[in-house]
Image (cartoon, rainbow, N blue to C red; front, top):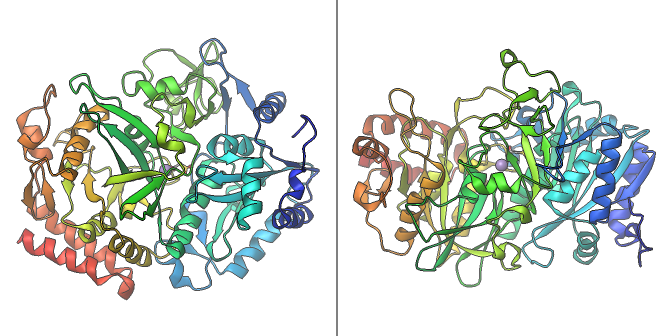
Length: 590
Ligand code: SAT
Ligand code: MN
């Protein structure tokens, strides 16, 4: 890809370990050529032009969406494939009941067969990348080899990719090896394999999102969660956001919600007009790496450099920042088009779709115009609320951790855990309705501990044990909360307005951390009373508010039974501390 001035040292000579690996992959996959990614803007422009010439990318309306493009993935390749995602550890128990498992030798043999000769006639791209600020001791590096230029462009937006990353790898000496080929996009020849013991990923047969952009879920969560346990930190499926109060104090919180449950919106929240003086700063919208600091606090970095967010629902009313952010230099995947080549998606109040996400004339009888899991890829720097601290090598100190799910009933709007230990149980008990982010049925409730069910690279029981260990090291541990923006009434109507109004809940969270807000004890933890929430200017009936802040003992006794049955699947590896906390909740429910 590099065409500019001659370089001091060719990339292919910077790190012997990388070069040797690239050579072995080249010999196996037989590409027509090998291109090392420098990570320059010129290179990104060149790749984009090439994809436009080849008809893979469509340039969007340059007046309204300058620098934006549309990519259409194969219609059978539009989401993560959890049933084809494996953790390959020597002992099956190390992967745990939460993962599909395959013996590493068997998995390597299977993948070697798929990869053999798979890049004939194609270009092999080498993408060295750094997850986290280049100069941060908390960051970790990887190299992705792919035969997809679309994946290469995405990785260049989503990570710090290119020369600087390779220089760091040459210095660090270690990196995560990620090998990817789109293969034939055949769902029957598709596997996403992880080898945490070798810090390696092998992905074949998909070109989409978390299956193919290996820096994201594969590295920054599945492999990193394993690395984090070895090294004493946490790799989590969490957004990181800074909230500045009208008094000018900024606190950072990290929140875990399952995919497509509004992490991006919360990370870029727009304060409502009735809460003047608040400012919101996005550090990250999907992944947080949390390290115990020397001061006894938990410090967070966002390993990513871009956002790969859900498009439908984004509009100037729901989230002005997000809408602004994706108006230029954005790569859209699987949205619809208007007659004048503007991107279109469900939730936009302007424009008329004429071409659906598959490139067919739009026919409302054939489903939505944009795919429900259509995505934008955009640099984090395009975000109007991007935090100046997002590039800080030390990360940001975390005041509160917030878990949440999408639940019609049971879970109240917000509650606070009794302690770190209880908070780990609250995280381990997260349940949520499934979304379009993964292949499979949408809307069924499943357990999704810490929103990590699809992403934890090892046995959940060991992971909860690790959470307890990390907590024990923190003399100033963040408080832990649980929220649910998705409670509905008997008619199926949402009880809480969500979006910017969620700030009211976060204000209570921060005030609890500062010892300033009241709460009432309940069997499941501490809940705000109606008067503890800032409801000034909020249009919500007192019955709705009391429904949102109530704990139904009968429903919760059933919930406790469910949680116990779930934890029992992990057998004797489950930390007894969690069962003890569950027993406390149960006895308080009476
Ligand atoms: O496809 S991704 O895993 O990148 C998006 C998501 O599910 O959160
Ligand atoms: Mn996610």
